[in-house]
Image 1 (cartoon, one colour):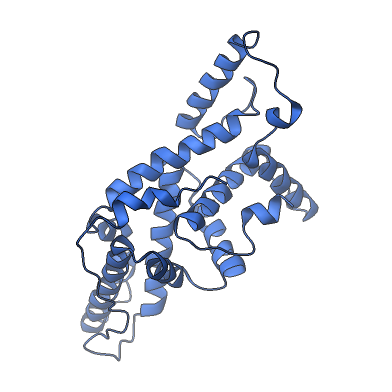
Image 2: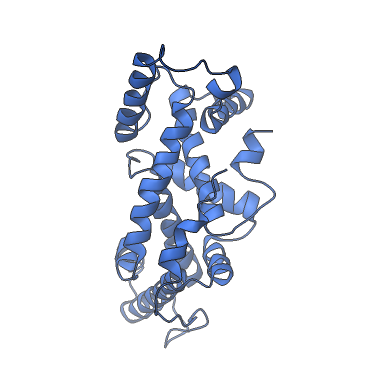
Length: 262
């Protein structure tokens, strides 16, 4: 698995931003009837992780929201055995990262503001109107740069991984990635005579395709069959979650690789 945690070296550590943990901060009125701070904080944290995964998938995630949500929560519940917020906190502690620290601080401040609003207005819809995580991330210095680097780096890893085994007849997965995959397939076909023959191992060396086949098989065995396209999409999501774990030094005994590449 490519070691992508080095992506953080020039971004996370080269900043003077300070981080104050406000996780214990209470709203002025603790007797809020219409607001569950823990639940709201968890939604914001999950959306942060989702934004990172979407960046890794080059934001070609139309109609995949439910799949990404389910994959993240399955990973957090089954493999990490915690919460999305704890995932961010643990990553922040391990990396000593001002970026993650600022994200956590923004989440806490947002929770306290919404809690106060809900208390004052007695409006149960206050939290629903305040769930825009992108507003939080816009306030975090250097996050945009990190996101762009992940967008380019990991999506290119997806292309390289799949292109090792594709042919020109493979069905598309993501529009922008597909063009690159199709170009590589065409180039491979045109230069076939010029290239040395590949061994069977090299020709089929695709982590994503192997995971995709295992996912489709698992779904069939569970009497919930899915299409090969859905299997491919889920495999790419799982691939990106493994990359996120490596990026944030969240090492688990189980993940998409160990589950589907036994």
